[in-house]
Length: 159
Image 1 (tube, helix red, strand yellow):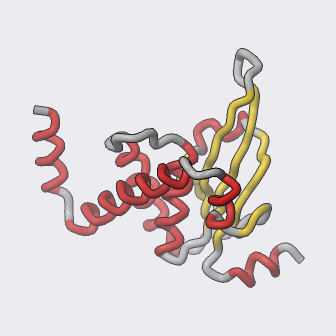
Image 2 (cartoon, rainbow, N blue to C red):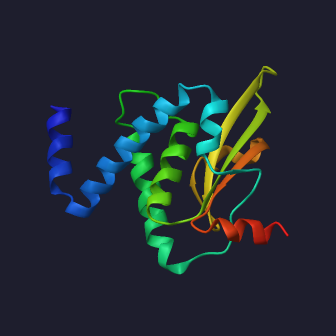
């Protein structure tokens, strides 16, 4: 019965939203696959290591950022696989890249209550966090990857 309600709700959303949700589902699956591969092989696809994109907002992208963030959050609850922080961040980065929107993926580590090492990933574009922001303050950044539509802008910022 739940599935029927969800199918009806999906059928009522507009076409643009349907395509966005399907894209998010596919990108989450792709990101989950990438997570199963050794990280050393995946890292090169994530962008320029140890660089960040600008914190400046491109006003025209604000609506796209919100839409991608909502789609990733929503669809991660409907996947048949684990879609936690790293999967969401990679999926979001790929969706933003398709829209020529710069983003930075952060990887962080911290210790939990037991003293065990834990990891977290989050995604930022301009001044907005697309995924993973809810607990990012607890983590120390150990790696970051910048994906910019104009790679030259990354090099200019680092000068």
